[in-house]
Length: 261
Image 1: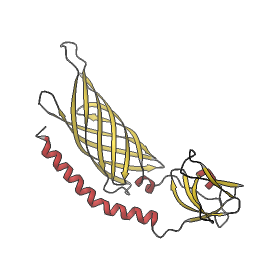
Image 2: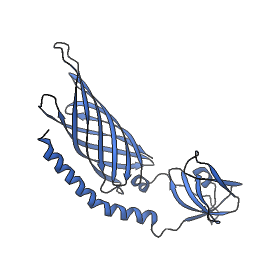
Image 3: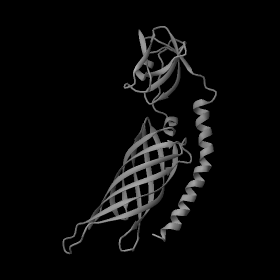
Image 4: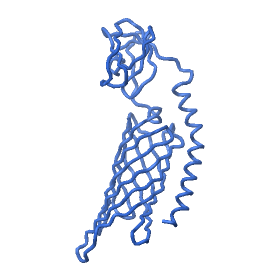
């Protein structure tokens, strides 16, 4: 483990430098696209009424009803819920299907675009599956992630490794840094730790299952496809800290698809 410590420190330093480099650029782009000179969108209620919820979801209570013919301002979007403001200054959340039935100043129905590249940059949750090569063995992974900021997220994953002489189960927790989250082809860097449990298949010699700690550093790319779908490819270098003090390095390549919300 001591041999890996300098590499781990260098990886942390590199990730920190990349994070600081991309933070200012990413924040400027996001602010400009979402909170720049754009004015709220004004639409007219065409339904008999719309209901304003206190939060972006059906579980939030309705606290106000606005009637047909009133004009409202659309302030922002969160998934399929829209924050609006009435002429009297009340602000609340309205579901997408009600916004779609409002009218623009020209008399047309309001058009709602699907999830965009900008929403991809501001995603909070992501989940997906990947498959690939784990030092010559097949590997399948399911993962989920939460973004604290557009540049920083945490991910948890579980993997199954299918080797010739033994299978393995792996659980991993990692930090991911996204220096340019507004790019359609968005690079990222990860560092993390976890455990791996090996299950030998051979019956010629009695072998015991083993559980070892792992650490990794890696890099990859996310590609925004359409709506809420993302293609992801990544490389990781694992170090397995074996109980025999004979650490093992593993190269892993994987690719797959995910959704964000």
